[in-house]
Image (cartoon, rainbow, N blue to C red; front, top):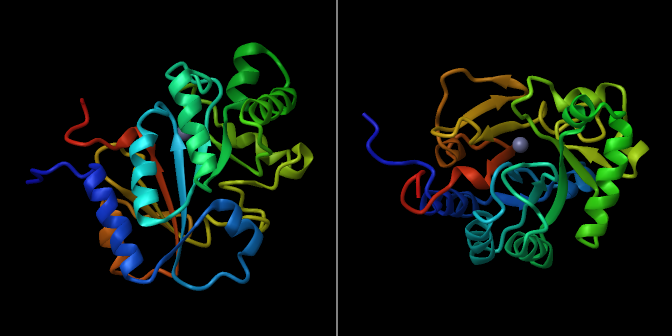
Amino acid sequence: MQKKFEFTYENLEKHYLKALSLGYKMYKCIDYFEKKNTLPLKIIVNRIDLDFSVKKTDKILDIFEKLDIKGTFFIRLHAKEYNPFDFDNYRIINRIIKSGNEIGYHSEVIDESAIWNEKPDDCLRRDIKVFNSMFNTEIKGIASHGGMTGLNNLDFWNENKPSDFGVMYEAYDDSGNFGLFKKSFYISDSEWTHWKCYDKGNLLKGNIKTFGEHLDDGHDLIYLLIHSDTFYTNHFYE
Ligand SMILES: [Zn+2]
């Protein structure tokens, strides 16, 4: 019987520390896009989606700064759970950028298109423009958010290319330009109470080994996805 909570900041820090001690190097998504053919073995592409909370990201940044690791943080614009421009959220997003991490847009263009009856490509162009202006940046990457509408925001990329929108990659893109998901061992916290994993695109059903436990298997290329929302100091309801 499981008696301890897995998704504490303390455990997260331990997993990252173990990765570093085993010789893993941590990279942002843009590093993988730009240098994938020259990167060493034993790397972790470190991705963080901000689905419901920007504020919880502060603690994750504390860990990253302490261990000197970087990642790519994908931020929504249309969440009803947070306003990226609220006083503390804007401060934290600037902290992400200033500490050398990458930010990207966590896209919901298919949802926008269905709810507002607007063309998804118009929505995306406007989103990127607003996002870049809001944070005085030029994003390189987009990751599609999986929400509750029943629609799949990733479907947009069946007919569109990132370069058509002035960006370089979509984080689940399998076209070969990015192609990380199907080449990597993918570990995600997206089940809320336990980890899940995919080996080169195939779900390993029932495998709930933690990020730290997977490190013992020595995978050369790990794609790690965590969410700011999943983690806590003591318990989920704090
Ligand atoms: Zn998401």
